[in-house]
Image (cartoon, rainbow, N blue to C red; front, side, top):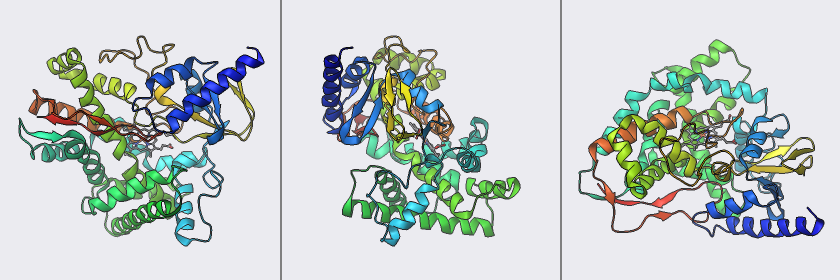
Length: 417
Ligand code: HEM
């Protein structure tokens, strides 16, 4: 490309990424399509001081080369959003920098080992009856023909009830957990500052304190739950971790899968309403439920942009040089529709095989809770479609949540059961 062409590409990329960051498009897919095909699909966005990778192979390169693309930067960036003189901010930084998500190997390996064994697909199956009970109790509250908002009244309780039961914190106050999870999620958004950040940190720390007291109780008296399993494994494996490390991982488990799983469930129902032929296929053969979940996750990527990675050395993505010390974002929602990887990428086809979507990311930080999210989806959709096979769209249209860049999903989905 000539210099003039490079300048045109950069200017157009900045225009399009600005639109995404302004939260304007309800559906960013057309913008992703253009950005993926513009130049080499890797673009610098000055307001975020970061590079963005829109193609599948480049997103995968970032995930797989964790020695170059580091996650260990919590106390470095973004600079200045925390107040080192505020004791609550200091506590929060200490909590966050211990999270597996913000560490590189080998420390990441040790932190992840705390929960890894409890989250293999086989180990997660042990929680199936618990998830089934939580879903049954929820579905019992409704009847065929009733009008409901699927997001607010149905999907929102599934992951919270499931993870509370799995961790053994059923008795902990739900509004506090919801506020704590939302608070923790919003602290990762660098545009949340001032009073809003203070409140988010306070809400998150309240949840941290309450899980800390549950851990103390389980140390004194183990039960049949994940916290007790983790404490037992800690003693057996003798990992070099302290109590604060364990606390951070357990709190993150409680919070990380809530909004994402809600978005997976509501995205699935939305697609069934949009594509009657695919719905008929699934309802005639519920053994397709896991393939249906995969295709939903591909097209409705709940985490469109995971936290960025920091380049530890100068490297290349596509034809673009990423300088040492620069941040790089993977745009998973764009990678999941890359025509180089998926035939007819915008089509919703539940029988798509293979379906190597990047929705749980890849590499060492790929989602540890994915087997639980999949189990929740399998149990929920199977029971829901069996109990309410004739559900239809409600009177009001579905509403996408606007204004979010990293986490996407439906805000409202009125349906008739
Ligand atoms: C559909 C639901 C879910 C989606 C789409 C999702 C997506 C993701 C993604 C994209 C990452 C990688 C972040 C990165 O690369 O920095 C991640 C990491 C993680 N997820 Fe999930 N997640 C879901 C459900 C869950 C659940 C249910 C749990 C807990 C029970 C969970 C716990 C975690 C944890 C602990 C990590 C950090 C892993 C690490 O850094 O090694 N997630 N998730």
